[in-house]
Length: 506
Image (cartoon, rainbow, N blue to C red; front, side, top):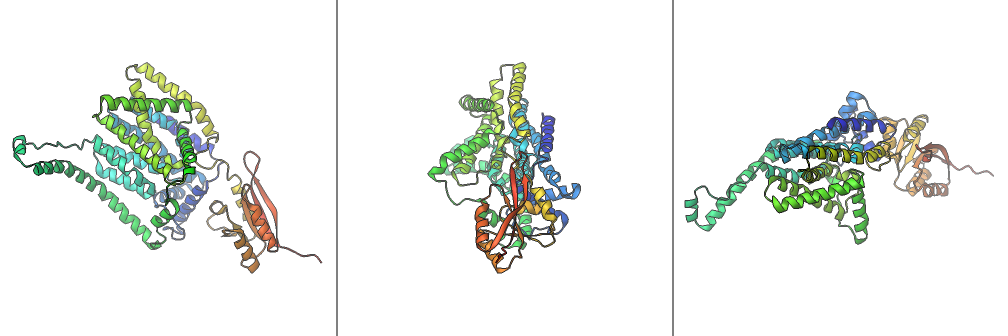
């Protein structure tokens, strides 16, 4: 199953060969290129709002394979494949020797269109997911320092890893059996002690091992925090990646009443793409819910039941937070949650088939795989709207090639396509790129002579460029199309305008 998942992910890499970078992918690849070339190893020239580990891994891929789209996507691809093996190991550890739960969990993740589409990208989430799964596996085995190391690697990749600290600790506490007897060994003597002494003994019996766990976790995390602080220090407090991340990504409000249902529908849609098969989604929801209810009713104290409660409880809390707090509704925000949700879904499915025999289990697996065939085909054909770019930036490479033909120093005034053009123009473009926040700023710069006309304005086909052209013309400049790019469906995807001084004819 892991090899099949690897094959599908490499097939996805081939299927996105014609996909240009999503804007955030272009940003991350630009950072990695600056590191790989040695021109800016600490990224001091950029306003970085994320930790650097993912960037340095991509830079290493550039150093080995050369700068390009395929090289940038390789690290996430391998992280996704290794995540399948990590999920198998975690499921075997959490649910005992019976491989049925692990098999179903890996089947769901290996054939997940959502996970497959994120494998050949440059986003941080596939790597964060791998580190979190390894941290869960380490904590479940009682290897707390390894768990702390993997959590540190996750945190050094993206700050959102902080959300997954609680389930890592909880799974380890539940499964490793940090349950000390709440009774003193000498029962006779304990019964003679005062009540406060009994309470002290109970708390000490529980707190001492928990304190040891926290210390073991804290050591690698402290080392990671020191290294990140040293890397971040040259930026100063105002440009710290922590400060910029809080400014860019952390909402300062709860959602409004009008946002409740639209946001719920969007998150529900992203969750549905984990399999892309409505029938299978319904079956997994029913099986997982029924299995959890049955376990709570008949086996409430078993570790497997507590593990299910931890996973489901965390999923509900996390989804409730990203729904009700005004976070961006990005599909990648549930990437790490997907494998963790696969575990209780697989356990519920295995419980339903427990007394049906192996032939029925094999048949159920084949049926689940059959239901995933159509969503997989749609995903590999680029018809599933998750993951990287799906044709939005078709033609950006041709637009960059057009700009490369212009004389050195030609001004290019951009508003919508900065990082995308910046990557495809190369690290040292011949043209001069300048970003303008609004049409008036561009018109004023032209009028003052800050930019020498003619200059070029690239715009996506769906951008409100008419307002920009109207403002420029009102300032006494002409604008006309000089380059048009088309997407894979033949529609216009990008237009390049040349802005020049109006010549009056008497």
